[in-house]
Amino acid sequence: MKVQVGIVGAGPAGLLLSHLLDRAGIETLVLERQSRTYCENRVRAGVIEQGSRDVLIESGLGERMKREGLIHYGVALRFGGRSHRIDFAALTGGKGITVYGQQEIVKDMIAARLAQGGRIEFEIPDVSIHDIDSNRPKIRYTDAAGNPQEVVCDFIAGCDGYHGVCRRSIPPGVLTAYERRYRFGWLGMLAAAPPVSDELIYVNHPRGFALLSMRSREVSRIYLQCALDEDPDEWSDDRFWEELDRRLEGVDAPKPQRGPSLRAKDVTQMRSWVSEPMRYGRLFLAGDATHIVPPTGAKGMNLAIADVCVLARAIAEYYTAGKTELLDRYSDICLRRVWKAERFSWWMTTMLHQFDDTSPFEKRLQLAELDYVTSSRAGSESFAENYVGLPLEYA
Image (cartoon, rainbow, N blue to C red; front, side, top):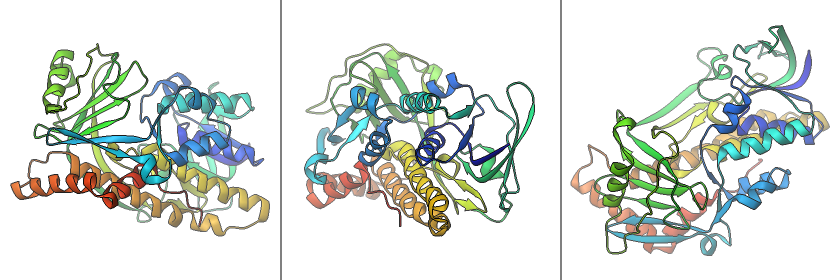
């Protein structure tokens, strides 16, 4: 079997890449380890940057998002018992973010690809990558009928996440990994309760960080900073809500309307990680296969979208003009944005969480940083610019 671009992974990165290449007349095959049901119901990020929203709409994937997504033009930073709003629209020329679950984007993308005749094969657990340093890289796998398959490609896109096969197929010594692990996690609850606010609230409190988010006008998504080894089963709904109330205390404390959990509580691990370069031979990595950010800055899915926008343009340029300059610069272009997002996510995490080894002096500096960000236009502008998303770059 021959295909121009083989794509491993049917998350937002792989599906968007397939869609963009199809619009350029380039044939793709998407292989996914999990079932379609699993992919469409895997709850992940929910904050979409302005640039990501624009990409989805311009490529014809944003109709349901426009109807159902919640547009926010600000967030609140809460510390010292008070909330301080950062006005995105005023600080960025009218830009904002959209709350729309990653699983909903995946549903929209899968439906669009299948409606357009796109090839997606689910439940393919044994993908292997070969000859990526040649002009004829290959993907081998067993299809759903049990038949062995070999796909000869011009290019392979590794969009299969941190645990995927693509990055691990690159020879030892080629990649350099940079990592920061945090010694706490986020205990998350999805609750049948209306959001306490129309916008996200980030909380710095001596008892720990909290984030009040939402998935719709009827469903709240709330996180509490917790120990890495926290057992979610030990947290009843009442205990969770009571702890949230403690972290929201203050003169203008919002009053959450309580509701039951909609699914089991979970603990999100926090880390910053980058593996570079993002290319080896004819294999190009994108999304979580090559970088992970802590969720504080809401950058994970948005970075994946930015990666494949660059990659789709580079591959299209190769087929239409025979040029390889953009392909050759893919890693460098993407990594500039990746490291800026890593910096912002690290900064947000450092500013908002409690650390076991923080001295009293450093805690005062943390509060001073929050005071500066919320009281200085320059500080607020920098926060807003990064949160709504830096411009996409292709050079």
